[in-house]
Amino acid sequence: MKRIILSGGGTGGHLFPAIAVANALRRLQPDVELLFVGAQGRIEMEKVPQAGYRIEGLWISGLQRSLSVQNLLFPIKLGSSLWRSYRILRRFRPGAVVGTGGYASGALLQVAAWLRIPTLIQEQNSYPGITNKLLAPYAHSICLAYDDARRFFPTDKITMTGNPVRDNIRQFETADRNQAFEHFGLSPTQAVLLVTGGSLGARGINNGILTHIDKFRQNNIQLLWQCGKLYYEELQAAVAAYTDTIKLLPFIDRMDYAYALADAVVSRAGASAISELCIVGKPTLLMPSPNVAEDHQTANAQSLVKRQAALMIRDADAPEQLYEAIGQLFDPIQSAVLRQNIKQLAIYDAAETIAQKVLDL
Image (cartoon, rainbow, N blue to C red; front, side):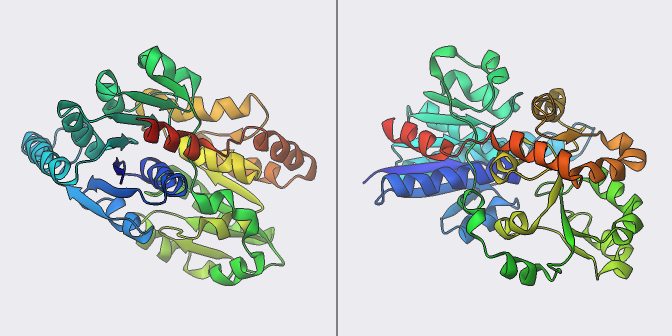
């Protein structure tokens, strides 16, 4: 029996590709034994069991960019995570280890390299995270989604695969739209704008939407709004008078339903989000996060903008420009162009391609 460990998390952008690869591994090798390793207290500790997989947690977090007492604990956490990773690997004895980014995958794959266990890393972005850049010299195989990322990795290890996308997103068109409207408590007689800042939420998007909140009601546009758990309570009070047209949620579990009923989307420009948006083919406005390495979300967004596959504005411009830009998503001619062009960028089989690379190891 093949045993494989997958590690990735901290955000949905690192986690959901790992789950997609796990599902593909089970399809290709039904008797495979899979184990996830994540960071304690992060999104993976909840979402992986919900997806039907076992997970073990490491006591690990990243360095803070500002001076913080948390940084003093980093060496202790790192040592703890390396030791626990060693124990997990010696007990489970995997034939391969897969990392999709995040702090936990750094510790685990480093120990796997020391133990000479074959490793594969999957990088979602055009500008790689520090974890994957540090692991690259030890990895046996590296799967990329963007050509711009090639310069950071050894050429002979690279395979261009695209980003894995959750199974329910690839099959979103089979979702019952009537059930979707009922699930979220929205009306099928009015347009729906899906707003998402990713699994953790995005203050820039939330503030921009809040600035124009009256205009959505005036123009019969409902909002399905994933705001992030950090912002949920404050926004819940701010939209209390709009519950007839706004469904505010800290996190959306049924994204297949969300995409099924959405007429248009406002989203951050993380690589995993963009991969999903290409598959669902909705008119999209991207608001890149200004708080990421090398401003790589702007590069992600511009790769779509130059193909007329999405619109883009920056957080700083949202108070003045957001509603006008959203209006373009609902223009019949503009929306038709955006739908057609973004669908042409979709990659459906990335998870299967990566899973086969893992089995080949």
